[in-house]
Image (cartoon, rainbow, N blue to C red; front, side):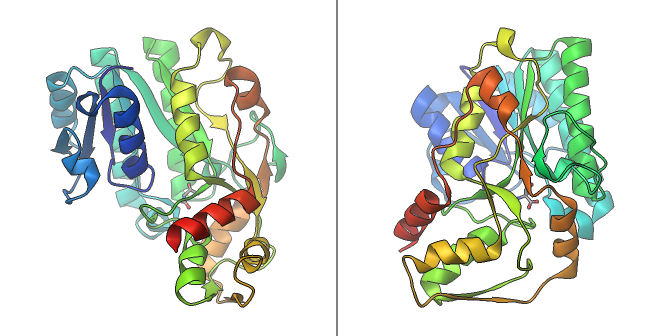
Length: 311
Ligand code: VAH
């Protein structure tokens, strides 16, 4: 990777991935783009361009202008927003993806986009969800993600584009809060623990979902993109997870640091239904075997770091 163009660079993943890649590859080699501009380090620390990913010509022009050899396509609507605005989600998530794949094909770029545990559905085995299994998601976000996996594999098989992807679990971070996701509760709970020593969860007790701390997610992206293609039996997309948690298990870990922290519930039926259609815990064996995936943070280590950083 020498010249990397990132879409959605101001989002939860993009805002940290841009900084990390600029440190590793040089500020001028990482072109951050997003639909809006802010005064953040992402905008001030290196090349930044306004880009609406549904504008394929502009995406092509920017990739050409900066001589991009890698496209990391992150711009998308997350699960809860997609469920509220399904047609907008289809047009943005799939239109943006096709533009990024076409630009990669025309300019010979390596390509990465995240999939999600949201690509699985209620008929998928819930525990130790295999890499290759039934995928009948019942959300628009899941339809977008499973379609995106198939399309990315098609661009690899048909056009030889070096496409790679990860099925991310809920991502937990303290730099840029996620927006419009179902797993956002697992980020909010840490902010509220510091601010109010209490949190009301919109996800119900006993609802397990896969999660991962952002440093592990960023390392997984770089390690997958730098992996020897000869070892890849899969491409779009690899199961990766660090832990399977529920609101009460995060609470118990927080209480080791803030004993007076309390959790209550006010379940949001829409996001609860989305969460219940997803696996409880996925199997990351293929990622470990094919490119050495390894998560450094478990619930205890992540909780200690989140609370320390948010203080
Ligand atoms: C969401 N954070 O909640 C995203 C993610 C697995 C969840 O895809 O929609």
